[in-house]
Image (tube, rainbow, N blue to C red):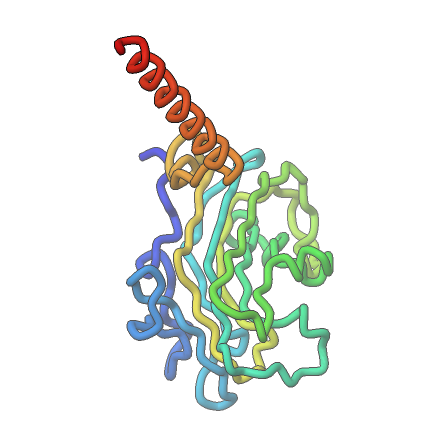
Length: 237
């Protein structure tokens, strides 16, 4: 299938995290485009084990050079006021991706979430507390061909390349009490950009100056036509 979405909602997302009480919910009241959304509720110590306030996608096999495009619409609780001490631009709802090595080789090799790598990248992946309405976040990158000898925590691993990715949704910081909703998730591996959804762009209205010039031209033609009728009519008398 051309441009198969590998992050369909909800079937390609894990709506449970560990045992016991769950804080991941499929929300049929807060909809996006008429469809249910995934909601992440607050974590409560001693009640649930999802201390990262995270919802994981499906593990996917990749190789160096693969082109990945991932998207999600994110809505933060509109009446929630961020109370943390970290800079507010580093907090809210987030779309991220983990890169991993072959099964059994250490922890994650790398992440596309900007922590602890690059503050600019981190901010780019977030919809911050206080943001109004739904906002889209997009990752568009090539899987690197780097040979890794340590995971992202610095633990040594046998030399290896990235072989798997997993997309995830989370709330930062996990201790905040605001809710976050996610919708319209997409993930493509080596998409053909000449096929939908990348070419499925609705037509736009022509610029106002073109419309206006067309109306002016039409008006001039009408006046010329009226003049010809008058002249012809006068010639018959």
